[in-house]
Length: 246
Image 1 (tube, rainbow, N blue to C red):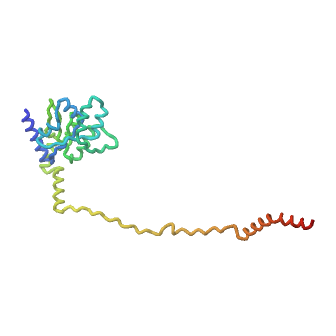
Image 2 (cartoon, one colour):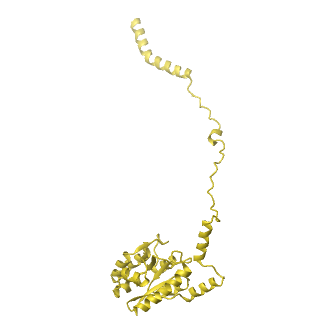
Protein backbone atom coordinates (compact mmCIF):
# COMPACT_ATOMS: atom_id res chain seq x y z
CA UNK A 1 0.00 0.00 0.00
CA UNK A 2 2.86 2.33 0.87
CA UNK A 3 4.58 1.63 -2.48
CA UNK A 4 1.36 2.42 -4.34
CA UNK A 5 1.03 5.76 -2.54
CA UNK A 6 4.61 6.69 -3.39
CA UNK A 7 4.03 5.79 -7.06
CA UNK A 8 1.04 8.11 -7.20
CA UNK A 9 3.01 10.84 -5.45
CA UNK A 10 5.89 10.46 -7.90
CA UNK A 11 3.49 10.66 -10.85
CA UNK A 12 1.76 13.79 -9.54
CA UNK A 13 5.08 15.46 -8.69
CA UNK A 14 6.35 14.80 -12.21
CA UNK A 15 3.23 16.47 -13.60
CA UNK A 16 3.70 19.61 -11.51
CA UNK A 17 7.44 19.65 -12.12
CA UNK A 18 7.14 19.46 -15.92
CA UNK A 19 4.24 21.86 -16.32
CA UNK A 20 4.63 24.36 -13.46
CA UNK A 21 8.31 24.27 -12.51
CA UNK A 22 7.82 22.77 -9.04
CA UNK A 23 11.22 21.81 -7.67
CA UNK A 24 13.10 20.88 -4.51
CA UNK A 25 13.08 21.85 -1.77
CA UNK A 26 9.32 21.48 -1.80
CA UNK A 27 7.78 24.35 0.20
CA UNK A 28 4.70 23.09 2.01
CA UNK A 29 2.35 25.63 3.60
CA UNK A 30 0.62 24.15 6.64
CA UNK A 31 -2.51 25.44 8.32
CA UNK A 32 -3.83 24.64 11.80
CA UNK A 33 -6.14 21.84 10.67
CA UNK A 34 -3.30 19.92 9.02
CA UNK A 35 -1.11 20.30 12.11
CA UNK A 36 -3.94 19.05 14.31
CA UNK A 37 -4.52 16.01 12.07
CA UNK A 38 -0.79 15.20 12.14
CA UNK A 39 -0.83 15.42 15.93
CA UNK A 40 -3.81 13.07 16.23
CA UNK A 41 -2.32 10.59 13.76
CA UNK A 42 1.09 10.77 15.48
CA UNK A 43 2.70 11.70 12.17
CA UNK A 44 6.26 13.02 12.30
CA UNK A 45 6.04 15.52 9.46
CA UNK A 46 9.74 16.32 9.29
CA UNK A 47 10.60 12.65 8.80
CA UNK A 48 7.67 11.31 6.81
CA UNK A 49 7.13 14.12 4.29
CA UNK A 50 10.61 13.89 2.68
CA UNK A 51 10.28 10.09 2.44
CA UNK A 52 6.80 10.33 0.92
CA UNK A 53 7.74 12.99 -1.63
CA UNK A 54 11.19 11.46 -2.16
CA UNK A 55 12.88 14.84 -1.90
CA UNK A 56 13.88 17.69 0.37
CA UNK A 57 11.00 19.58 1.97
CA UNK A 58 10.51 22.80 3.90
CA UNK A 59 7.63 23.09 6.33
CA UNK A 60 6.21 26.62 6.18
CA UNK A 61 3.39 28.62 7.67
CA UNK A 62 2.38 32.27 8.11
CA UNK A 63 1.87 34.70 10.98
CA UNK A 64 -1.87 34.65 10.38
CA UNK A 65 -2.00 30.88 10.93
CA UNK A 66 -0.02 31.21 14.16
CA UNK A 67 -2.26 34.04 15.32
CA UNK A 68 -5.37 32.01 14.58
CA UNK A 69 -4.04 29.03 16.59
CA UNK A 70 -3.28 31.32 19.53
CA UNK A 71 -6.84 32.66 19.60
CA UNK A 72 -8.40 29.18 19.46
CA UNK A 73 -7.04 28.32 22.90
CA UNK A 74 -5.88 25.17 24.66
CA UNK A 75 -7.66 22.71 22.36
CA UNK A 76 -5.18 23.42 19.58
CA UNK A 77 -2.13 23.99 21.76
CA UNK A 78 -0.34 20.96 20.30
CA UNK A 79 -1.05 22.09 16.75
CA UNK A 80 0.33 25.51 17.62
CA UNK A 81 3.58 23.94 18.84
CA UNK A 82 3.95 22.09 15.53
CA UNK A 83 3.27 25.26 13.51
CA UNK A 84 5.75 27.27 15.57
CA UNK A 85 8.54 24.91 14.49
CA UNK A 86 7.85 25.72 10.81
CA UNK A 87 9.49 28.45 8.80
CA UNK A 88 7.36 31.61 8.84
CA UNK A 89 6.76 33.08 5.40
CA UNK A 90 5.95 36.78 5.08
CA UNK A 91 2.38 37.55 4.12
CA UNK A 92 0.71 40.83 3.23
CA UNK A 93 -1.29 40.99 6.45
CA UNK A 94 1.39 42.41 8.73
CA UNK A 95 -0.92 45.21 9.96
CA UNK A 96 -4.04 43.18 10.69
CA UNK A 97 -4.16 39.38 10.69
CA UNK A 98 -6.80 37.43 8.72
CA UNK A 99 -7.98 33.83 8.93
CA UNK A 100 -5.51 31.09 8.13
CA UNK A 101 -7.40 29.93 5.03
CA UNK A 102 -7.60 33.45 3.60
CA UNK A 103 -3.92 34.00 4.24
CA UNK A 104 -2.84 30.76 2.53
CA UNK A 105 -4.97 31.60 -0.50
CA UNK A 106 -3.23 34.96 -0.81
CA UNK A 107 0.17 33.19 -0.73
CA UNK A 108 -0.63 31.16 -3.87
CA UNK A 109 -2.27 33.89 -5.92
CA UNK A 110 -1.07 35.07 -9.34
CA UNK A 111 0.07 31.68 -10.58
CA UNK A 112 1.76 30.50 -7.38
CA UNK A 113 5.19 31.92 -8.32
CA UNK A 114 6.93 30.43 -5.25
CA UNK A 115 5.58 26.92 -6.04
CA UNK A 116 3.97 26.40 -2.65
CA UNK A 117 2.16 23.19 -1.69
CA UNK A 118 -0.97 23.76 0.43
CA UNK A 119 -1.49 21.24 3.25
CA UNK A 120 -4.92 21.48 4.86
CA UNK A 121 -7.92 19.52 6.15
CA UNK A 122 -10.28 22.43 5.47
CA UNK A 123 -12.68 21.38 2.71
CA UNK A 124 -13.64 24.95 1.80
CA UNK A 125 -9.99 25.92 1.41
CA UNK A 126 -9.32 22.79 -0.68
CA UNK A 127 -12.15 23.65 -3.08
CA UNK A 128 -10.80 27.19 -3.53
CA UNK A 129 -7.25 25.94 -4.07
CA UNK A 130 -8.43 23.58 -6.81
CA UNK A 131 -9.93 26.50 -8.73
CA UNK A 132 -6.45 27.90 -9.37
CA UNK A 133 -4.18 25.84 -11.65
CA UNK A 134 -0.73 24.69 -10.59
CA UNK A 135 -1.12 24.38 -6.80
CA UNK A 136 -0.27 20.96 -5.30
CA UNK A 137 -2.72 20.05 -2.53
CA UNK A 138 -1.97 17.76 0.42
CA UNK A 139 -4.12 16.32 3.18
CA UNK A 140 -4.14 13.52 5.77
CA UNK A 141 -6.52 10.59 5.50
CA UNK A 142 -6.52 7.50 7.75
CA UNK A 143 -3.35 8.75 9.48
CA UNK A 144 -1.44 8.88 6.19
CA UNK A 145 -0.22 11.84 4.11
CA UNK A 146 -1.67 12.10 0.59
CA UNK A 147 -0.68 14.33 -2.34
CA UNK A 148 -3.89 14.98 -4.24
CA UNK A 149 -4.00 14.43 -7.98
CA UNK A 150 -4.03 17.51 -10.24
CA UNK A 151 -7.41 19.22 -10.21
CA UNK A 152 -9.60 19.36 -13.36
CA UNK A 153 -8.84 23.09 -13.63
CA UNK A 154 -5.11 22.33 -13.57
CA UNK A 155 -5.42 19.61 -16.22
CA UNK A 156 -7.50 21.88 -18.47
CA UNK A 157 -4.94 24.66 -18.10
CA UNK A 158 -2.10 22.33 -19.16
CA UNK A 159 -4.06 21.14 -22.19
CA UNK A 160 -4.71 24.74 -23.21
CA UNK A 161 -0.99 25.49 -22.95
CA UNK A 162 -0.10 22.43 -25.02
CA UNK A 163 -2.56 23.46 -27.74
CA UNK A 164 -0.99 26.91 -27.88
CA UNK A 165 -3.95 28.77 -26.46
CA UNK A 166 -2.12 29.81 -23.29
CA UNK A 167 1.43 30.28 -22.05
CA UNK A 168 2.25 28.85 -18.65
CA UNK A 169 3.90 30.87 -15.91
CA UNK A 170 6.91 28.55 -16.03
CA UNK A 171 7.33 29.13 -19.78
CA UNK A 172 7.04 32.90 -19.33
CA UNK A 173 9.82 32.84 -16.75
CA UNK A 174 12.01 30.65 -19.00
CA UNK A 175 11.50 32.95 -22.00
CA UNK A 176 12.32 36.01 -19.93
CA UNK A 177 15.47 34.36 -18.57
CA UNK A 178 16.66 33.37 -22.06
CA UNK A 179 16.11 36.91 -23.34
CA UNK A 180 18.11 38.32 -20.45
CA UNK A 181 20.97 35.88 -21.06
CA UNK A 182 21.11 36.80 -24.76
CA UNK A 183 20.91 40.50 -24.01
CA UNK A 184 17.59 40.99 -25.77
CA UNK A 185 16.00 42.64 -22.79
CA UNK A 186 17.09 46.18 -22.14
CA UNK A 187 17.06 47.27 -18.58
CA UNK A 188 16.03 50.90 -18.33
CA UNK A 189 18.91 52.92 -16.99
CA UNK A 190 18.29 55.13 -14.08
CA UNK A 191 18.02 58.68 -15.21
CA UNK A 192 20.01 61.18 -13.34
CA UNK A 193 17.97 63.92 -11.89
CA UNK A 194 18.80 67.23 -13.42
CA UNK A 195 19.35 70.01 -11.03
CA UNK A 196 16.65 72.58 -11.37
CA UNK A 197 17.88 76.02 -12.32
CA UNK A 198 17.03 77.99 -9.26
CA UNK A 199 15.70 81.50 -9.55
CA UNK A 200 16.80 84.38 -7.40
CA UNK A 201 16.42 84.03 -3.71
CA UNK A 202 12.98 85.43 -2.84
CA UNK A 203 14.36 86.93 0.32
CA UNK A 204 16.89 88.93 -1.66
CA UNK A 205 14.09 90.43 -3.76
CA UNK A 206 12.40 92.00 -0.78
CA UNK A 207 12.85 95.74 -0.34
CA UNK A 208 15.23 96.65 2.37
CA UNK A 209 13.49 98.05 5.39
CA UNK A 210 14.51 101.56 6.31
CA UNK A 211 16.08 101.88 9.69
CA UNK A 212 13.69 103.52 12.07
CA UNK A 213 15.09 106.84 13.11
CA UNK A 214 15.50 107.32 16.76
CA UNK A 215 12.84 109.78 17.83
CA UNK A 216 15.00 110.91 20.68
CA UNK A 217 17.26 113.63 19.30
CA UNK A 218 20.53 114.52 21.02
CA UNK A 219 19.17 118.01 21.70
CA UNK A 220 16.29 116.62 23.72
CA UNK A 221 18.69 114.39 25.64
CA UNK A 222 20.81 117.45 26.49
CA UNK A 223 17.73 119.33 27.61
CA UNK A 224 16.75 116.50 29.87
CA UNK A 225 20.24 116.34 31.29
CA UNK A 226 20.25 120.06 31.88
CA UNK A 227 16.91 119.88 33.61
CA UNK A 228 18.19 117.17 35.88
CA UNK A 229 21.28 119.27 36.66
CA UNK A 230 19.18 122.34 37.42
CA UNK A 231 16.86 120.41 39.67
CA UNK A 232 19.78 119.04 41.64
CA UNK A 233 21.72 122.36 41.84
CA UNK A 234 18.89 124.86 42.60
CA UNK A 235 18.49 124.09 46.31
CA UNK A 236 22.23 124.53 46.91
CA UNK A 237 22.30 127.88 45.10
CA UNK A 238 19.29 129.18 47.02
CA UNK A 239 20.76 128.19 50.34
CA UNK A 240 24.05 129.92 49.55
CA UNK A 241 22.25 133.14 48.54
CA UNK A 242 20.22 133.16 51.73
CA UNK A 243 23.39 132.75 53.78
CA UNK A 244 25.07 135.69 52.14
CA UNK A 245 22.05 137.92 52.63
CA UNK A 246 21.80 137.07 56.29
